[in-house]
Amino acid sequence: MKKTGILYIVPTPIGNLADMTFRAVKILKNVALIGAEDTRTSAKLLKHYQIKTPMISYHKFNERSRVEKFLDKLNNGEDVAIISDAGTPGISDPASIIIKDAIENDIKVETLPGATAFIPALVSSCFNTERFYFAGFLPEKKSDKDTLLKELINIEDTIIFYEAPHRLVKFLSRLREVFGNRKIVIARELSKLYETYYRTTIEEVLANPDMITLKGEFVIIVEGAQKKEYSDAEIVEMLQTELDKGESKKDAIKKVQEITGEPRNRIYNLALCLENK
Ligand code: SAM
Image (cartoon, rainbow, N blue to C red; front, side):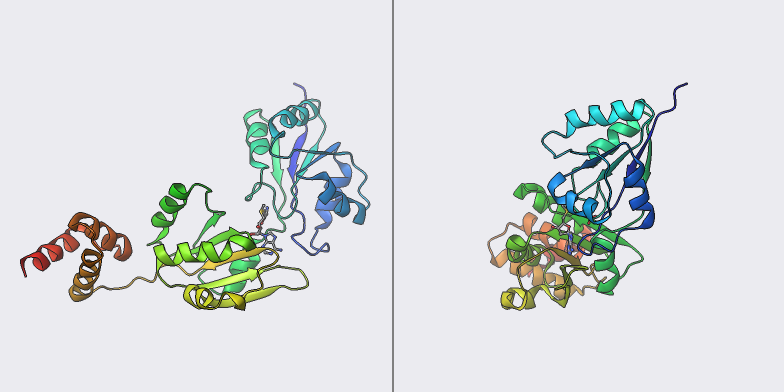
């Protein structure tokens, strides 16, 4: 049987050019072809490391047709490497289709360990790293966004988001509406000259957005839900607040259940008591 090549998934620096591993450089020098998200961005990296391997773009709009080209090479026994603009390909960038197709075509895929933005942000956040949830960029559609955020309200794991600077404040307002106030760490410009960690809360930033320099790249780490014991009186007060806002009994129960994570039966019974008062 003919031997196929290996598809290498190669992480590249997220800001500091020196964050490239020896193995990554060696592989990029030795493969037959490099697939890059944007060849102009990656050209600087290749020049810095004197990598002369041919490179083609797999930008998301032509990704499918490029996959065929990569598969031809791989089926011909040649190795191919995939890089993205920054960090690990396949993490919040368009490399995942190529990886999926390669695996479906029985091509061996080797992903190298290396740079990615969320790991340093998570570790430096000092929040729980035992269990975490990588949410990346929120979906674009508002309804999908809301569905995901609501699913995350009660998880106690640390949550990681990627967001663009011009959407950061809007993103935090939405987070405030759904999660309430939480401790957050905003990691800006990791591994670059102006690397900054803002250890703060959602409300503190919303009250004073100027405290953040809204330029560059951001990872937002949100502390997981703190398991709180809710007294009956607290639940009744929350129900009353929802009813005062004009919510129906059913919606008030649903909202309080989302916020507290308490069993529906308990909230329902307290709503009945409130009604009979
Ligand atoms: N593949 C990348 C990775 O492994 O992290 C992520 C690519 S995604 C298209 C780009 C997003 O990653 C940015 O909008 C930002 O949220 C985050 N990011 C990338 N580089 C960063 C940096 N130096 N500092 C902070 N966040 C960064």
